[in-house]
Image (cartoon, rainbow, N blue to C red; front, side, top):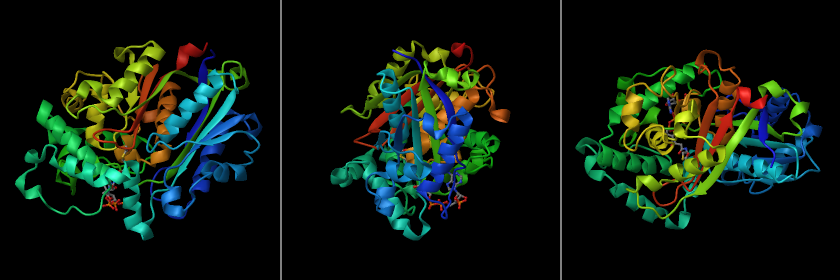
Length: 417
Ligand SMILES: CC(=O)SCCNC(=O)CCNC(=O)[C@H](O)C(C)(C)COP(=O)(O)OP(=O)(O)OC[C@H]1O[C@@H](n2cnc3c(N)ncnc32)[C@H](O)[C@@H]1OP(=O)(O)O
């Protein structure tokens, strides 16, 4: 089977852009990725597209990819729409990799345009998140998560209305409380992750928020769902991203020196595990599979982008990726080991909490950061001598964890000859 490479990749600026459409983000991202690869539209033999919101908020229920790509001249080739909640575009990447490995094509496009911010439809904007779980069991899930670690919530924060928010913030808050109860993780450690990611994003001109926030400031901010405060939560974001990937055979047509090899990619769905069973967390299962494919060990990882839909999630995911033992993610983060300049920098882009989280596009945006790093083009946030990078992208929520998780292992530099 052929090796598969990323030869072109781009992300738009992320943020709240009420004047822009899904088509605008897609156009900018696809043109950026083609330019980066030195490719043209006629090079693309098959395309995958991800978007999660256009159906719920704009009524574009199906064929979103065809609608966004045809105006760019991408037509007459297979176009497949992939929806897997926040893991949509990484799931799409896996389909494209499999297609190339199976020999169906040599050059593929994976693209996403996402629009989440609709100030005039605020209620619908938040309600749309509930579609990322089993809507027929929403109340059951809600009750279950409310009871998780409830005793830990300080009295002054119990039963208070913290305003409109996505269902997911309550789910992650419940998981955070369970982790605190089990391992002694502290709210201050979660704040340290948020503060570190906000600092990282000061070096990322595409990030939604680009200001530093101290640990103390994070803790003093508005509460969203205990123990999570505002800067610990992924914001509402618009944006797009695209990648051109190819087989070994097609590689000489592109800038070989800047190519990054996809050494492993795995997709796992959640299981019936109990919340306390951390060893079988979906992120752990997905990373083990991807590491096996890539024939690497956690100690080989030079940097990672993980799905910090909340700052707590980063603690959970670095444990799942094996960057530290279970229960030690909070301490590892607080001691600065996951910061730029630390042992294994995590979320150098600023992560979802600061760089932004246009959900369908997030998988490719994570790859964009890692490819930029592996090419040595990350400027002030560059991780020295980075060779192996890992992306972890989680989507949806079923029972007590993400419904889908994709882990991708990338290798840059000397692997490409
Ligand atoms: C599997 C998964 O990935 S699930 C995750 C999917 N994503 C989500 O669930 C999104 C979760 N986020 C939310 O629900 C919302 O963003 C909330 C509740 C946290 C905040 O929403 P609101 O109360 O409407 O606040 P709003 O977005 O208006 O922000 C107000 C201001 O606070 C500040 N702010 C908001 N979020 C952040 C953040 N993460 N970091 C720093 N500042 C922030 C900004 O100054 C912002 O104003 P601006 O965006 O206009 O500059």
